Each structure stands twice: as C-alpha cells, then as structure tokens.
Length: 414
Image (tube, rainbow, N blue to C red):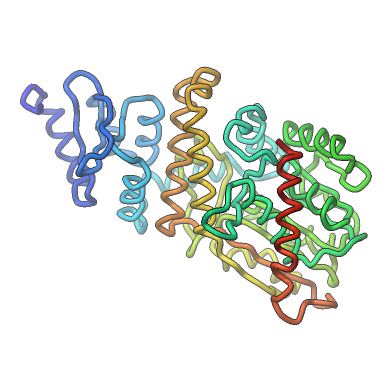
C-alpha cells in the first residue's frame, strides 16, 4: 500500500507511526478512500486519508485527532472505546508544547466571567432540547447516575442518584434549598416531590429553564420549585442546604473563592451542602479539543483544588465519595442510546456534529475507565450545623419503598 506513496507521505506516515505503534495502535493510510471498518481487528487501527491529516497529527495530536475524526478524514477500525483507552494511558503524563499553548489561549478567551459563562453555557446546553431527549433518560439528567446494582437501568440509576443526594443532605420537609446549575430541573423537582422541601434553582441556560418550568407546572410543583434564569453568583437569600450537580466543572479555578462566598452567603455557618463534579487525581488542563469543540470553559479540578471552595468559609467536609465507575457506566448507556439515534442526529445536525458527539461520549467513557477523570461527591456543613447524623446508616433507608416510588416517577416522566 505504501509503494505508490510519495517520499513525503512515507516520511510523515513513519513519523506518526513512531508515536502510535509503541502504544499498541496501528496506523494506516489507504490509497483512495477509508475502508468500511471491520468489527474486531487484532490490533486497533486508525486509518488516515491524506498527507495533510498526517502532518496535523504530528503538529497537534489531540485537536487534530478529534477534528479529523469529526470531519471523516480519520476512521477508527474496531471498538472505539478500548482504542481511546490505550491512547489515554499512553499520554496520561504528557502534554505537547502546542497543547499547553492552546490550553492557555483557551483559558483566556473562555473565561467564566458573568458574560463568558453565558457564552460558554449557551454553546453546549442551549442546543435543542430534542437532541438531548434522544439519548438521555426521561428526566433529562445529564450527570452521573448511581447504579445500586449491575442490573439497574439508566432510569433506575438516575433516580437512585437523586435519592442518594437527598439522603446525603438529610433533607427535611419545609426546608429551603438552593440549587446552582439546575439543568432540566430533575434534581429540584425530585427534592420537592419526595422530600417536601422548597427549592430555588439557578441556571443560565434558557433552553433548560424553559423546559424545567414546563415540567414543574405539569407536576403541580410550581409552589415549591422556582426556576430562576440567572448566574449562581446572583444567588440571594438564606437557605438550609445548597446543592450543585455538574456545575463546578464550569466555574473555573479562578472563581472558586467566589463560589465559596456565594455558598456561605446562602447557608451561613449552620447549613450544609453537596457538590457533585467531574475531577482529577492531580491538577491538569482539561482536554483542549473538548474545550474548543464541545465544552467551552470546562475544567475538572483535583479534589484538593475543589476544597478551596470550602476552606475559606470554614466549612467542614463530612463525606467524600468517588463514583468514577458509575459515570463510565452512565456514559455507556448514553452512547448506546446515541448510536441508536445516530442517523437521526446526522440528518438533523450534520455528519460532523454526529461524529463529534460520538467521539466525545466514547472518549469520556475511556477517560473514566482508565482513571484520567473522576467523579466526586463532597458533602459539607458549616461549623454551627446541628443534627448531623451520627453514622451513615441513614443512607439507603426505605430503599424498597423509594424504588417503587421511583418507578412511578419514571413512568410519569416518560
């Protein structure tokens, strides 16, 4: 196959192979077009279509790989997730100088200021809600689920996650809760319906707020849940508890002190809270390709970085749990559903968009599988908080009854 190639093409192919082959990945350049992938090749294979793509992989591997796959200039033969796991493991400790430069540039242009956050969130979350409906559960939860056992469905696991959060916060009827970054509203609605609390939920995604308000009206919960289209920095009032699922990733490390002050203003020294977020084992820039093409402004903090949100206000950390394996399983469910709707997505949004999201979901599975990403739940309380449970036996109480309620909840959402 390489005999008809020019000297330049052979040189570029050889140079890229020196990078790929040591990590157990085969690289190939077809003469005319990319062949249809076989199901299970002995060695994972990346097919590259031309000289330009080869050169770009040498100069900026991560961004070029993602863009080339999205645009159909690169194909993956075999199961995508194991191949991406191999690539993650081989590059876990290294960042090219160009990736570092681009990462710094993205940090500057994607700052999570009041104006910047609106722009960043709009790029990802204000896609048509119908797109997310194709592959999320009926409650539209776009955060890690909690699988109480390996047979649980995605719907059951998402309900289990909502209940786990409520139990960790030991919510009591009549309390007032602030939720920052409320998504399509499932967490707020669940807290109100099952635990009898009142919720003020803040979100800057217009599409999500509209959907959440409609759901609250349909379920007769508008007296208990108020969805506010505003930035977390503008949370006002006093609350018994504070909760955030999947928002810390969009705050930016430079704003952790600000978030901590907002939380302290909301719950003072007597309240408690829970942060649920994607993290890392050590500080490292988030994927440049994902920040450019999918999730502008994203940053996954190391646990010690995230604690900078809590330490200045003298919050006590009560519980830390890592649900990394649960997020990998959640993403597997999402990718399976996405693949079933792939042709629909491609028709509506274009092939580049569909391939980009396929790679994003598969790459996320790989990152959690190999430990490049973690999923932390951190429970905390003010120094004057009273009534903290003596043991953890309160978790999982009335599980059978709650699961039966959740089945009704799932049917109502469908």
